[in-house]
Length: 265
Image (tube, rainbow, N blue to C red; front, side):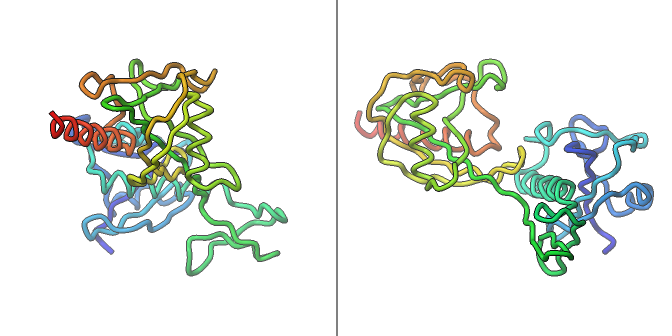
Protein backbone atom coordinates (compact mmCIF):
# COMPACT_ATOMS: atom_id res chain seq x y z
CA UNK A 1 0.00 0.00 0.00
CA UNK A 2 1.57 3.26 -1.16
CA UNK A 3 -0.12 5.59 1.33
CA UNK A 4 0.92 4.74 4.90
CA UNK A 5 1.69 6.46 8.18
CA UNK A 6 4.71 5.25 10.08
CA UNK A 7 4.98 5.30 13.86
CA UNK A 8 8.74 4.86 14.17
CA UNK A 9 9.95 4.29 17.72
CA UNK A 10 13.34 4.24 19.34
CA UNK A 11 12.54 2.92 22.79
CA UNK A 12 9.44 4.91 23.76
CA UNK A 13 10.34 7.94 21.62
CA UNK A 14 8.46 8.68 18.38
CA UNK A 15 10.02 10.03 15.18
CA UNK A 16 8.43 13.23 13.87
CA UNK A 17 9.47 16.14 11.69
CA UNK A 18 11.38 18.97 13.33
CA UNK A 19 8.55 21.51 13.30
CA UNK A 20 7.60 22.45 16.88
CA UNK A 21 4.20 23.88 15.94
CA UNK A 22 3.06 21.26 13.40
CA UNK A 23 5.20 18.11 13.50
CA UNK A 24 4.31 15.36 11.03
CA UNK A 25 4.84 11.62 10.82
CA UNK A 26 6.98 9.88 8.19
CA UNK A 27 5.17 8.22 5.28
CA UNK A 28 5.71 5.00 3.34
CA UNK A 29 8.67 6.31 1.32
CA UNK A 30 10.68 6.72 4.55
CA UNK A 31 10.94 2.95 5.09
CA UNK A 32 13.59 2.43 2.42
CA UNK A 33 16.05 4.61 4.32
CA UNK A 34 15.72 2.61 7.55
CA UNK A 35 15.12 -0.91 6.24
CA UNK A 36 18.41 -2.29 7.56
CA UNK A 37 17.81 -1.15 11.16
CA UNK A 38 14.17 -2.16 11.65
CA UNK A 39 13.85 -4.41 14.69
CA UNK A 40 10.10 -5.02 14.54
CA UNK A 41 7.19 -3.98 12.34
CA UNK A 42 3.44 -4.28 13.04
CA UNK A 43 0.30 -3.08 11.29
CA UNK A 44 -1.71 -1.36 14.03
CA UNK A 45 -4.82 0.01 12.35
CA UNK A 46 -6.05 2.82 10.14
CA UNK A 47 -6.17 6.58 10.55
CA UNK A 48 -8.49 8.37 8.13
CA UNK A 49 -8.43 5.23 5.94
CA UNK A 50 -4.62 5.24 5.86
CA UNK A 51 -2.76 2.13 7.06
CA UNK A 52 -0.55 2.76 10.10
CA UNK A 53 2.54 0.75 11.00
CA UNK A 54 4.44 0.56 14.28
CA UNK A 55 8.17 0.20 13.64
CA UNK A 56 11.01 0.02 16.13
CA UNK A 57 14.54 0.95 15.06
CA UNK A 58 17.84 0.22 16.75
CA UNK A 59 19.25 2.47 19.48
CA UNK A 60 22.16 3.61 17.29
CA UNK A 61 19.89 5.16 14.63
CA UNK A 62 20.42 8.90 14.26
CA UNK A 63 17.51 10.74 12.61
CA UNK A 64 18.29 12.35 9.30
CA UNK A 65 18.03 16.11 8.87
CA UNK A 66 14.54 17.43 9.48
CA UNK A 67 13.49 14.71 11.95
CA UNK A 68 13.69 14.20 15.71
CA UNK A 69 12.52 11.76 18.37
CA UNK A 70 10.05 12.96 21.00
CA UNK A 71 7.83 11.56 23.75
CA UNK A 72 4.15 10.94 23.05
CA UNK A 73 3.05 13.35 25.81
CA UNK A 74 4.67 16.25 23.94
CA UNK A 75 2.20 15.66 21.11
CA UNK A 76 -0.93 16.04 23.25
CA UNK A 77 -2.94 18.86 21.74
CA UNK A 78 -0.80 18.76 18.58
CA UNK A 79 -2.19 15.57 17.04
CA UNK A 80 -5.90 14.85 17.38
CA UNK A 81 -7.11 12.37 19.98
CA UNK A 82 -7.81 9.60 17.47
CA UNK A 83 -4.24 9.72 16.22
CA UNK A 84 -2.82 9.96 19.76
CA UNK A 85 -4.85 6.88 20.72
CA UNK A 86 -3.55 4.93 17.71
CA UNK A 87 0.06 5.92 18.43
CA UNK A 88 -0.49 4.83 22.03
CA UNK A 89 -1.69 1.43 20.79
CA UNK A 90 1.38 1.19 18.55
CA UNK A 91 3.71 2.04 21.43
CA UNK A 92 2.20 -0.69 23.60
CA UNK A 93 2.45 -3.30 20.84
CA UNK A 94 6.10 -2.48 20.17
CA UNK A 95 6.95 -2.63 23.88
CA UNK A 96 5.13 -5.96 24.25
CA UNK A 97 6.90 -7.41 21.21
CA UNK A 98 10.28 -6.27 22.55
CA UNK A 99 9.71 -7.72 26.02
CA UNK A 100 8.20 -11.04 24.91
CA UNK A 101 10.85 -12.40 22.59
CA UNK A 102 11.16 -15.55 24.70
CA UNK A 103 8.64 -17.88 26.28
CA UNK A 104 8.11 -17.11 29.98
CA UNK A 105 7.24 -20.76 30.61
CA UNK A 106 10.13 -22.69 29.00
CA UNK A 107 12.56 -20.01 27.75
CA UNK A 108 12.50 -20.85 24.04
CA UNK A 109 12.21 -18.13 21.41
CA UNK A 110 8.64 -17.10 20.57
CA UNK A 111 7.12 -16.72 17.13
CA UNK A 112 4.22 -14.51 16.02
CA UNK A 113 0.78 -16.04 15.86
CA UNK A 114 -0.54 -16.03 12.30
CA UNK A 115 -4.08 -14.84 13.00
CA UNK A 116 -4.09 -12.83 16.23
CA UNK A 117 -1.96 -10.43 18.22
CA UNK A 118 -0.07 -13.02 20.23
CA UNK A 119 3.29 -14.72 20.62
CA UNK A 120 3.44 -18.51 20.49
CA UNK A 121 6.19 -20.75 21.79
CA UNK A 122 6.98 -23.43 19.16
CA UNK A 123 8.26 -25.69 21.90
CA UNK A 124 5.49 -25.74 24.52
CA UNK A 125 2.70 -23.85 22.62
CA UNK A 126 2.33 -21.29 25.41
CA UNK A 127 0.73 -18.06 24.14
CA UNK A 128 1.56 -14.53 25.31
CA UNK A 129 -0.73 -11.56 24.72
CA UNK A 130 -0.14 -7.81 25.13
CA UNK A 131 -0.37 -6.81 28.77
CA UNK A 132 -3.26 -4.60 29.90
CA UNK A 133 -3.29 -3.27 33.48
CA UNK A 134 -6.69 -2.00 34.72
CA UNK A 135 -6.55 1.22 36.74
CA UNK A 136 -9.51 2.65 38.63
CA UNK A 137 -9.96 6.39 38.96
CA UNK A 138 -12.42 8.06 41.30
CA UNK A 139 -13.51 11.67 41.55
CA UNK A 140 -15.05 12.23 44.99
CA UNK A 141 -17.86 14.77 45.27
CA UNK A 142 -19.04 16.60 48.40
CA UNK A 143 -21.73 19.20 47.71
CA UNK A 144 -20.04 21.71 45.38
CA UNK A 145 -16.52 20.47 46.09
CA UNK A 146 -14.34 17.75 44.60
CA UNK A 147 -11.42 15.98 46.25
CA UNK A 148 -8.21 16.22 44.23
CA UNK A 149 -4.73 14.97 45.05
CA UNK A 150 -1.22 15.26 43.66
CA UNK A 151 1.56 12.70 43.41
CA UNK A 152 5.20 13.74 43.78
CA UNK A 153 5.83 13.17 40.05
CA UNK A 154 3.06 15.56 38.92
CA UNK A 155 3.88 18.88 37.30
CA UNK A 156 4.20 21.66 39.91
CA UNK A 157 0.79 22.74 41.20
CA UNK A 158 -1.18 20.06 39.32
CA UNK A 159 -3.88 17.99 41.02
CA UNK A 160 -6.00 15.11 39.74
CA UNK A 161 -8.50 12.43 40.75
CA UNK A 162 -7.52 9.46 42.92
CA UNK A 163 -6.29 6.49 40.88
CA UNK A 164 -4.60 3.14 41.35
CA UNK A 165 -4.09 -0.33 39.90
CA UNK A 166 -6.54 -3.15 40.49
CA UNK A 167 -5.19 -6.07 42.48
CA UNK A 168 -5.75 -9.77 41.84
CA UNK A 169 -9.25 -10.90 42.83
CA UNK A 170 -10.74 -7.40 43.02
CA UNK A 171 -13.71 -6.01 41.18
CA UNK A 172 -13.36 -2.44 39.90
CA UNK A 173 -15.56 -1.20 42.73
CA UNK A 174 -13.54 -3.05 45.36
CA UNK A 175 -10.33 -1.59 43.97
CA UNK A 176 -11.77 1.92 43.99
CA UNK A 177 -12.89 1.70 47.61
CA UNK A 178 -9.47 0.36 48.64
CA UNK A 179 -7.44 2.93 46.68
CA UNK A 180 -9.45 5.87 48.02
CA UNK A 181 -9.16 4.62 51.60
CA UNK A 182 -5.42 3.96 51.23
CA UNK A 183 -4.53 7.19 49.49
CA UNK A 184 -6.70 9.76 51.28
CA UNK A 185 -8.44 7.92 54.17
CA UNK A 186 -11.95 8.63 52.86
CA UNK A 187 -15.03 6.40 52.53
CA UNK A 188 -17.39 6.80 49.55
CA UNK A 189 -20.59 5.42 48.09
CA UNK A 190 -22.82 5.96 45.01
CA UNK A 191 -20.09 4.90 42.60
CA UNK A 192 -21.06 5.79 39.04
CA UNK A 193 -19.18 4.69 35.92
CA UNK A 194 -18.11 7.54 33.64
CA UNK A 195 -15.88 6.19 30.84
CA UNK A 196 -12.60 4.40 30.12
CA UNK A 197 -9.42 5.17 28.21
CA UNK A 198 -6.40 3.22 27.04
CA UNK A 199 -3.33 4.92 28.50
CA UNK A 200 0.06 3.75 27.17
CA UNK A 201 2.18 4.75 30.17
CA UNK A 202 3.02 1.95 30.07
CA UNK A 203 -0.03 -0.29 29.37
CA UNK A 204 -2.97 0.89 31.45
CA UNK A 205 -6.71 0.76 30.91
CA UNK A 206 -8.09 3.69 32.88
CA UNK A 207 -11.64 3.17 34.19
CA UNK A 208 -13.13 6.38 35.56
CA UNK A 209 -15.91 6.82 38.13
CA UNK A 210 -17.57 9.52 40.14
CA UNK A 211 -18.44 8.79 43.77
CA UNK A 212 -19.98 10.51 46.79
CA UNK A 213 -18.16 11.39 49.97
CA UNK A 214 -19.44 9.57 53.06
CA UNK A 215 -16.91 10.07 55.84
CA UNK A 216 -13.29 10.49 56.80
CA UNK A 217 -10.67 13.18 57.35
CA UNK A 218 -8.13 13.48 54.54
CA UNK A 219 -4.83 11.81 55.42
CA UNK A 220 -2.51 11.56 52.38
CA UNK A 221 -0.74 8.22 51.96
CA UNK A 222 2.99 8.74 52.60
CA UNK A 223 5.20 8.54 49.49
CA UNK A 224 2.17 8.10 47.21
CA UNK A 225 0.26 11.34 47.80
CA UNK A 226 2.07 14.64 48.28
CA UNK A 227 -1.09 16.61 49.00
CA UNK A 228 -4.87 16.19 48.86
CA UNK A 229 -7.66 18.64 49.56
CA UNK A 230 -11.19 19.69 48.75
CA UNK A 231 -11.59 22.24 45.96
CA UNK A 232 -14.64 24.35 45.25
CA UNK A 233 -15.66 23.88 41.61
CA UNK A 234 -15.17 27.62 41.06
CA UNK A 235 -11.59 27.57 42.37
CA UNK A 236 -9.79 24.64 40.81
CA UNK A 237 -6.01 24.16 40.64
CA UNK A 238 -3.93 23.25 37.60
CA UNK A 239 -5.49 20.12 36.08
CA UNK A 240 -4.26 17.31 33.79
CA UNK A 241 -4.14 17.76 30.02
CA UNK A 242 -7.58 17.72 28.29
CA UNK A 243 -6.63 14.57 26.34
CA UNK A 244 -6.54 12.54 29.58
CA UNK A 245 -9.56 10.75 31.01
CA UNK A 246 -8.76 12.41 34.35
CA UNK A 247 -9.41 15.85 32.88
CA UNK A 248 -12.52 14.69 31.03
CA UNK A 249 -13.86 13.22 34.28
CA UNK A 250 -13.18 16.43 36.19
CA UNK A 251 -14.70 18.67 33.51
CA UNK A 252 -17.79 16.47 33.23
CA UNK A 253 -18.33 16.39 36.98
CA UNK A 254 -17.73 20.11 37.50
CA UNK A 255 -20.21 20.93 34.73
CA UNK A 256 -22.85 18.74 36.36
CA UNK A 257 -22.28 20.22 39.82
CA UNK A 258 -22.57 23.76 38.49
CA UNK A 259 -25.72 22.92 36.55
CA UNK A 260 -27.29 21.37 39.65
CA UNK A 261 -26.30 24.34 41.80
CA UNK A 262 -27.78 26.85 39.36
CA UNK A 263 -30.97 24.82 39.07
CA UNK A 264 -31.42 24.99 42.86
CA UNK A 265 -30.67 28.72 43.06
